[in-house]
Amino acid sequence: MIWKLIIVVVLMGIGALGGYALSEAQVRVPQGPSVLTVPVDDAKSPLLGSLVPGRSLGCKSVVDASTHQFALGEKHHFDAEVRNGTDKVALKVADDGRSNQLLTANAVANGATAPGDPLRIVTNGPRWVLAVRSGGWDSSTILIDSENLNVLWLNSGIVLGLLGQSILMQCH
Image 1 (cartoon, rainbow, N blue to C red):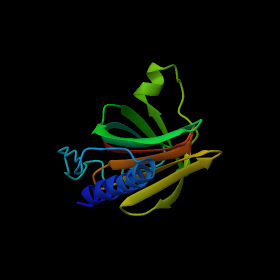
Image 2 (image 1 turned 135 degrees about the vertical axis):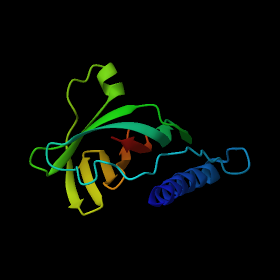
Image 3 (image 1 turned 135 degrees about the horizontal axis):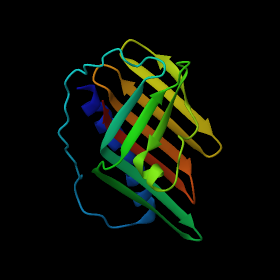
Image 4 (image 1 turned 180 degrees about the horizontal axis):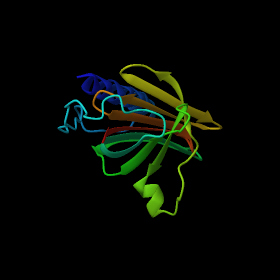
């Protein structure tokens, strides 16, 4: 389905970035690609059409992929990782329907009591909702498939080098 394609595209992007970094850094890596396959429930959601203002969803991350560039002093390198998702996320559509907010269980465990800055909804179609936030040195994008409530959450920024993260979540 479309999520399989999105996962492949995201992983290819991470792989390309990692490949470029590795070609520049002369680092030895194992030969062949690494693939993580995670079965997901691709059924249509009974909440179809429920992405209305004020609606809250509970989400569980299924796959988490990240890449980091470390650029301290003269030692530069990239790390890339793909793993089973472990975090849980609360996603709320704002009461005015113009933005989404996210709060992770990990953030709550570390003292957060409220979601971060809202992600402004820029596309709200019959099947897809796209919301973005950009500020300073980082950005976040979420793409919601309202047919089955799968969510792709993309984060990028600069913290002691480039970093990027893609999280595929299933919500209810």
